Image (tube, rainbow, N blue to C red; front, side):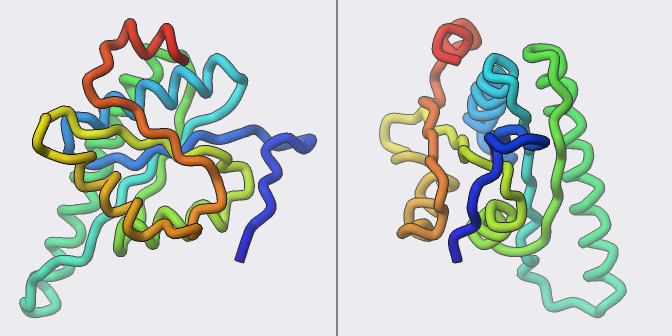
Length: 165
């Protein structure tokens, strides 16, 4: 199902979606997306996905682990929120979802008609390939994301990003 983008209609703004994870290059995607959003009058949505655990514990233990994962996700998003406000003077939207990353990205894109661009960052190591998130998205995408995907080189400096965004 293709959801019509409404980012250019009255009452809507183009949103840049960036996925937050624990990779070193994630910061580059966030800063690029934040600067692009600020320079184009758009908005930034930061998505963090809590993937299903590989634990087979009693329900009480599983619930505690989920709560701890959500709390950790909120802390990470709060740090990126501060960083975005400092470098781009915009207030990002934060979303936390449970599930598989590629599916949650696709679902959010389909649900939010203002999301117009997905921003990811490539890994910086020479033998690392594009990185786990980019690889996962590339394998899942096959036309599933009906918006452009921007891949930011993970080794760009803040100054490089400023010049590009």
